[in-house]
Amino acid sequence: IRLVGGSRCSGRLEVPHGNTWYTVCADAFDQQDAEVVCRELDCGAPVQVLGAAAFDKGDAQMWTQEIQCKGNEYQFALCPTSRSHNCSHDNDVSVVCA
Image (tube, rainbow, N blue to C red):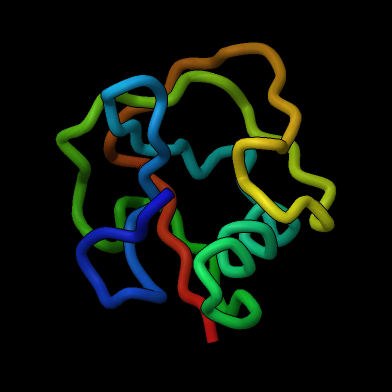
């Protein structure tokens, strides 16, 4: 995973799948999801979860599944996902870690 458009510990969230990077929708993304992102990147605790493409719109493909971390996963890839939904780059999620 990576944060783009800010610093090493803040920016638009992008996740890899195969050889492709995907942006993540802010709709169902919450504090527990951000906990896992910040932990995996070794960036401390999450300070803010921002929607509305706060760090600009991504040009990667859109991850269409809803992410449902419990907050204790040590890797974002281990978080459960559920049904897919439609989302646009207007609502790419960004995370700011401490």
